[in-house]
Image 1 (cartoon, rainbow, N blue to C red):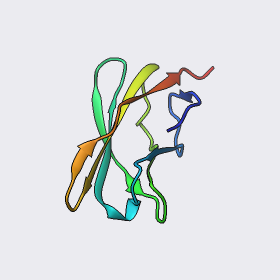
Image 2: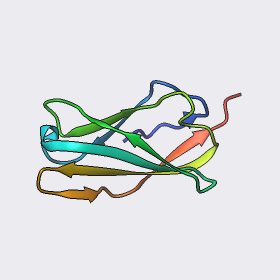
Image 3: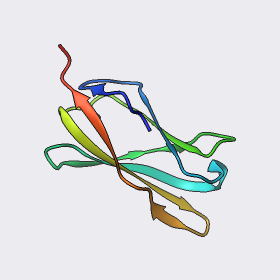
Image 4: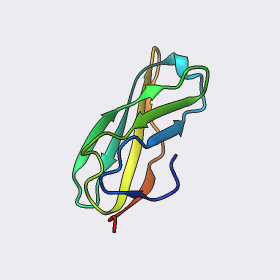
Length: 95
């Protein structure tokens, strides 16, 4: 998971999550993101081939509020569906 702070308006930053299993087993994945105001968003994530990682690339408008965001990955495989441990992401205002 990204550990450096992000800035409002960042685009193209890759958020990666290690799921501990072969990512080719994943049939669906998304990141639930809750901004400091409590507004939630769901971002469709994709498996990174030949790894144990899932990735979401930030798009225009995704990061729009300064503060501490909470992120939680949800993954579905053929025989399992569940959530990862939530993580936090610090977002700052650019100068």
